[in-house]
Amino acid sequence: MDLGSNFAAKLEPFLLMAKSLKGAAAAKLIADATSAPGVFVFAELLEMSNIQELGKSDTHSKSLALLELFAYRTYEDYMQNKDAFPPLNAAQTIKLKHLSIVTLASERRILPYPDLLRALDTPTVRELEDLIIDAIYLDILRGKLDQKQAQLEVEYTMGRDLAPGAVDDVLAALRSWADTTAAVLATLDAKLADVAAMGGARRAELADHDKMLQAALREAAERAKDRGAAGMARRSTGLGQGSAGNIYYGDAMDVDDVGGGGGQENAKGKGRKHAQESKPLRKRNRF
Image (cartoon, rainbow, N blue to C red; front, side, top):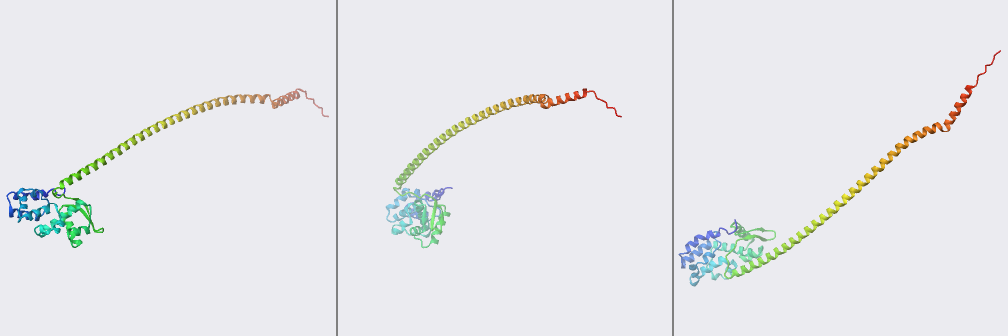
């Protein structure tokens, strides 16, 4: 649930009663509304015509000033001009300090303890931290206490009622914010377009590189295939010659063995043997 989403409902009973009240009764209603727990917005009550009429009365004009104080002013404003307001009771004092913390938190994200102590007229850090913790539990702001750095780190705050003339300042702030946001979005769009263009160029570069790589791989594969075919052809031719040579060389060696020097000697030896064998043997008589 967002901060302040149920605060308007807390004011509703006072709005219903205020419709028929004037003078002292209306002033009493303002005192009750500013003291009531959980009531932190007062714009609708402040805008009612019978409440505005209190400003024309010398007796009850301070009650209208009190309502304006709780609607959009701070505890510092009260301390600087106490005579302009009715005296505050304890509940009103604490509530006004809580609302003052909200106002300060809406202006700065980091609130040092010394600034808060001075703005809230709080004597000790312990009392200050108790006020901040109560405000967090009341769900009028979100943040954390940094005791080491002596500061309040604000995360989120409720919205307070706007003072007269503050609408123009808010509109100016919103216009400035819108212009800044538009400039940031334009810058982001330009950056995204640049990134997309760079991505497209990179993809095209990678595609060209892949095409070149595939072409180089195909060329290398074709060369390897051609070298393999040529090598196989040479090996096939060499094996045929060798086989034929071996056959022929074997026959030649056989011929050479028959017709060579050794063959001739064998032939001569055989001739002599035949010649010796052809001679008749002479028998000798033994006496």
